[in-house]
Image 1: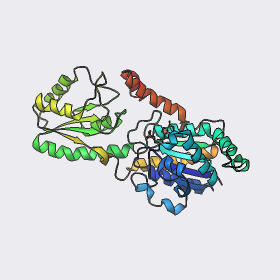
Image 2: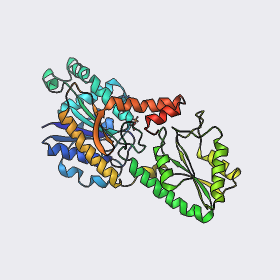
Image 3: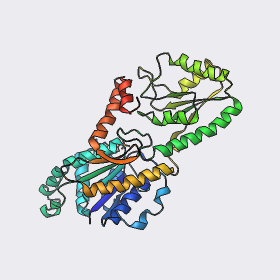
Image 4: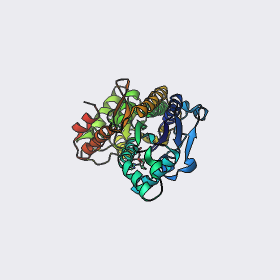
Length: 363
Ligand code: ADP
C-alpha cells in the first residue's frame, strides 16, 4: 500500500491532532501505511525515530485534544536546500513519497518548494552515492497535500482554517468573564487578541461579544479615529451602558501603518473619556484547550479528503490544499491559495486596504 506521512508545522492550533488522526486512519482504511513525522520539518530532517509508523490505536482519543500531539516546530534547516536534501534522504529510506502537511502559509510554501525540487534532490542523492538508482526509482515524484491549521483564519481561498473557531470560542469566553467584572465596576477593557496580518479573530470576537470598537489590520479606522472612537464610546455610555470593550488585533495599525497598541487605546479611554480602563492581553490561552465541535468536524473531513487527494494525485497536477468553501470540502491549487494570501499582506503593506479586504472576500 501507499506510504503516507503526516506532519504538523508552524504555529499550533486546536484540531491539528484530529487532522493527524483522520489522516492516519484514512490511510490505514485504504490499505496504506501511515507515518507521523514528529516536530514538524525538524523531524523530517532528523529522520530515524522522528518518523514513526502509526497504527490505528496510536491516535485513539486525539480528536478532542488541543494543540498537536506530534509536536510542531519552526525549522531553520528546512529553509535551506541542504536540509531538504537530508529530509528527502530520510523519506526515501522509509519508502515515503507522500506527505500531508497541516500548517500555515509558511509551512505550505515550504512543502510546495520541496515538491518542486524533489526530482533534483533524487538525482543528487544518487550522484553523491547516498542512494542507489534502484532506491529512488519508485520515488520520482513527491506527493504533497496541504491542510490549513491556523488560529488566525488567515489563508485565502478557504472559509475556515482548522483551529480558528476554537480560538474564537476561547476569546469569547474570556471576554464574557471580563464583561462581568467590567459591568460591576463600570470599567473599560482593551482586549488584545492574536492576528498579525489578519483581523478575523478580532472582528468576529467583536461581533460575537458586542464590542464597542474593533481594530483590524485589513481595515484601519479613519484618520481621526481617536475622536471617532471616543465619541462612539461616550455615546454608548450616555445610553446607559456600564461597560466598554475594545478589541485590538495584534497587528492593528492606522491608515499610515503606525501600530495602534492597546496602551494607546487605554490612554485615550482614560484621559479623553474619563473611564477607569484596563488592558488584558489574552495571549496563549487563545491557542490552548480542546477543539470546538466545528474544528473536530473540519479536521476529520479534511484529513480524509487529504488522503483521497494523495491517492488520486498525478505527477502533472499541482499540489492541492484542502479548503472549505460554503460548507463544501474542496481541493484547490496550493500555490494559488498561498499567492492570494501573500497578496493580502502586500496590499496592507502598500496601504491599499480596499484591495486587502477584497482578498479576504469581505466586500
Ligand atoms: P506557518 O506555517 O504557521 O506560517 P512559519 O512561516 O514559521 O509558520 O513556517 C513554519 C516552517 O515551515 C518554517 O520554520 C520552515 O521550516 C518551513 N518553511 C516556511 N517557509 C519556507 C520556505 N519558503 N521554504 C522552505 N521551508 C519553509
